[in-house]
Structures are given as C-alpha cells and as structure tokens.
Image 1 (cartoon, rainbow, N blue to C red):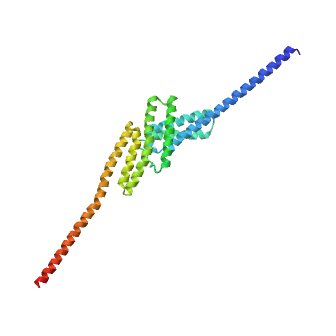
Image 2: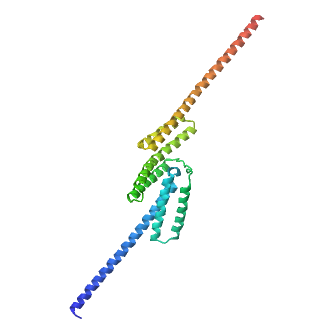
Image 3: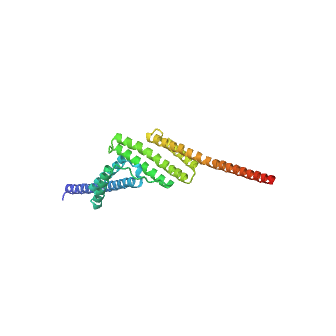
Length: 260
C-alpha cells in the first residue's frame, strides 16, 4: 500500500470521525432543545391553569378568561407535536369544553372574598405574572396590539383592586362589629390604593363608589353618636317628670295635712 493511499485513508478516517462527532453533537443539541421547548410549554400551561384556578373569578372577565383558555389550548396542541401522551388529549378536550362554557355564559362569576394579607399578595403576584405574560404574547404577535393594551390596562387595575378589596373586607368586618368610624378609615385606605392608578377609568369608578360608602357610613356613625345623647335627654326628661310627680304628691300630702 502506497504512502498516498495510507494518507488518504487517514484523512477519510479523520473526516469521518469529525462528521460523526458533528452529527452526534447536532442530535444532542436538538434533543436538548426539544426538552427545553417541552419544559417551557409545560411550564406555560401550568402557569395558565394557575391564572384560571387561583385568581378570584370576579377578576377575570369573560374576554380575559377566554384568552387564557385559548392560549392553553394552543400550548397543548404545540406540546402534542413533541410528545405523544394520552393525558394531553384529555386536557385538550377538557379545555375545549371549558372554553365553550365560558363563551356561552352571560352570568358573572360568584365572587370570592380576599380575607388575609398573604392571599392578597399571592393574587397580586399572579396578576403581575399575567401582565408579563400578555406583554410577551403581544410582542410575539400572539395577541393584537389593541387587545393587548386593553388587557394590560385592565390587569394593572386588578393589581390595585386586589389590594383595595382586602381593605374593603376589613371595613365590612368593622362595620359588622358596630365600628363605622374604623370602617370609614379603611375605605379611605382603599381610595389611597386606587389613587396610584387614578387615570384608569375603572379606578375612578371604584374611588367614587368608596366615597359614596364613606358618606353613607359617616351618616350612620353620626346617628350612633347621637343615640346616647338622645337616651340621656330622654332619661333627664323622665327624671324631671318623676321629680314633678313627687313634688305634686308632696304638695297633695301637705294640703291634706293642712286641711285636717
């Protein structure tokens, strides 16, 4: 075998080894990218489900709820291209049914009260995640610019509303305990929360509602404050009448004594 032939064989072996290495790396890179995409889509779907299940239903209007479910359906369809899993088909059917129910419904959802600080913070966190999700969807042109802007304005209002609702819950509790003045203070705090987004028409509407409630409670508190005074006045009148009665009785006794 000549030196030239040997050299060619060695070169071919080297080229073959490099080719095998390149192909192997490309396959590994493709596998890693596939895993990354699957994980990313699974995370996205779980996040969408959290929006639907953990954000109080009164915060997600029909349009926003529809959008979230639709993004979930799209995510499942994308996932099915990368992996074959019967569970995906089941989830897809469930989400398609849920979408039909939401689109057909005209009744507002039953509100869920926010009762503690921890819950309010968690809801605010979820709403902030939803805000960023919509921003990304709009940047990727998954949502048109006009709808995206409308959603973002609404969610920024919801973030403040979730905090204000907690304060309103406290106000209602104080009112039940017969403390309208403390309830009024809580409604003032709710107004302060909403003033951070005072240019939002929904915030203006909420602020006006809180002001109307403050006026109502102020009248109630004034009536409560007047009641002890009315009670005292009634008691004083009764005492005077009783004293007058005793005086008359005493006069009558004296008159009888004198007549005797």
